Length: 349
Length: 253
Image (tube, rainbow over the protein chains, first blue to last red):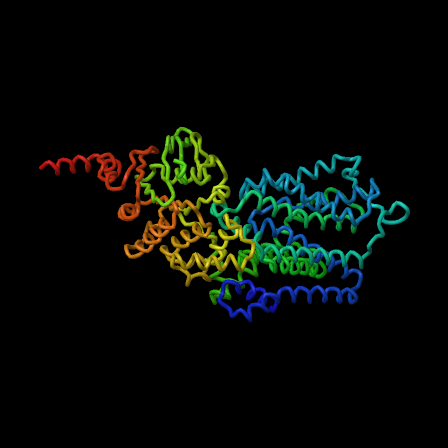
């Protein structure tokens, strides 16, 4: 897989004593590949049937969601099991504002991201003091609680019977984007999220997050304001997820709390990141593409047993590659040991 | 006492019913090495954690460079010019050795924003502690001695005015201790204040200007190293009453 190879050499480059001339152009290889991939996806659109276009749009959506989760769960190491709260909050912010206050979708897209980011900072301040399981459970609780709040704000959200964003006629504030429009918008969000992940993985901020992930106490004594860095990461993660939620709400037009705060969406994000390789940029991208593609394929070919087969595949993947595919390849390349059995043994707790 | 880089006044910490550290008052001026000794559980590590903000004191004050930093968070202490090592080494395992050190250049008082500059500076620090050749390795592959040197390098990457070394020489061989002592001496020459917590008595004697002896959470005695180490109370605390008595008896005969 050329993508893996290129990104791998690139990442190790600053530490390995590579000749400066060679390393200079290697730095740009992942960016170049990213742009090529983006162009390829733009070209692909004209080749797809309507159904396929929707499927690929969903893949883009999950790429963006997985990258968003990776910022807090992967880089920072705080496994958030309530990430869907940002998705739902973003979606409902847009839906309510478009339906009740006649707002245009485009400013609302950005505002929804900001609302999710602010909410991330707000709950991050108390919750990011918790670690491991405690953080996971607390965030799960926040998401479940928020679903109840949204369900009970009947005047604004329509409660359990849902809310309908007007997409046609005089009440429509924004021209509905249609399959083609949403394909492009989700592609844009996926590209944006990969860009955010790529920048974070290389810059100073990313160093702080990795340090916090690997040893928070040591990170503090190295001068990192761990509280600020964690809250910033959570907030940024919320921003990305909120944007996706807003777009999803507009695409669906009719939204329900059960769907927008569905815990399954969080689980999918987590599984995609973990299988692909958490704390990397390529991992969530690969994880989302492979898992969505596989899920769709199984749905079409093994209608009755598809979730069962998918579950079995996930279990096997996690047992064999607990650190995720990308991290496995990186380690194997460094040590020259590609044995899966040795890998399982190394990560057995 | 305005020259003191670090001063504590009546510093204490209680954990429930246990008074881990009580009433520690002392000061370290620039260019001095303070040795801290004491048996296991005497409160040495708690004392370091109190100074560096990892544990908040229940009583007393911590003054750094004359400024009250009592109860400040670890990163604020680091920015005030205090760096520490951990008794149990705490490398960032997913980073290379030089990236580990670069973290301190990026986030310490120098607040460097350019990655390449930070990595170059990290290489200089690694050179100083003698593990420049290991820069590209992951910390998990280092020997015990080199892992302790990395811990040292990470503290130095903050360019500190005061350095707290929590057993950086524990588990090292004789030949490995000498370079560390040499490094501490050169830091002292440069005007740093260094606090060395150590079990290796020879190391303490070789570098310390002053020694502080902890026993059961309190400062048993302090003063210049030879006087302190010949104090019968210190011998008793360390080696037990029987040994102290026998030593006295032996002296009489």
